[in-house]
Length: 265
Image (cartoon, rainbow, N blue to C red; front, side):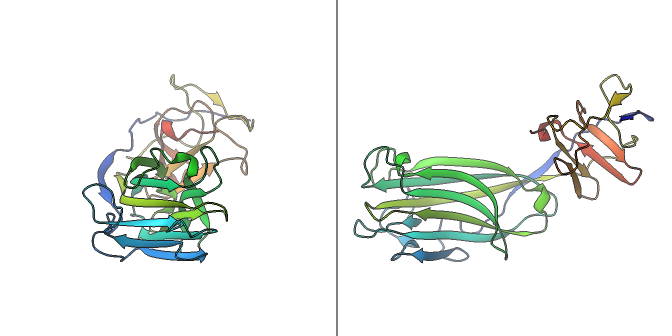
């Protein structure tokens, strides 16, 4: 199957207009709200505490897992619900983590994860990080380590999402995961300018190029000026290859831009 270039290409990158924080009370210094602690199994498997073992220059922290050496078989989470901005792009999560465990080195049996979940459905969207007692570092109280993760929130604009810190431990030896100084920043992106290309595959020389139905080809997402998006993937096997960044009039209906870094697969 072939599609041909029928108009000029207008190159214009989607730009970042601003970066904004979307969490409230990320350092826990204002108390528990709007964070929530949920014990799913065991005793006090999650919570927000003051004065014991926060990060340096902090007085309050959250924890999941075994609060004391006598606590075992814990399952719990600390989470906050936030609203994704209407013109959100990529989100950048930063936080500090202190892992203290009685497990032997390399055991890896007590698990910790950071997740985006849908709200109110509470379905997993993306596991951002997966760690365990093996990531103990110095294995000392207040020995916090920096972690970060990046995820595209474009498909979830105007929706509410749960940021969740979750742990589950076994019944043998205790492990606590302490979390502090959480920051989630989201890029606000400007919409693309109008394009002048009907749906098709374009190469840098503005000549005709094939549309491939080869599922091994890279997949991509087109973002439109109205902030909607369309994805070509295995469920729709028409896959464009070698598409340069630029703005396009897609199927005669929407003006959209493809960003080169959105390639995957």
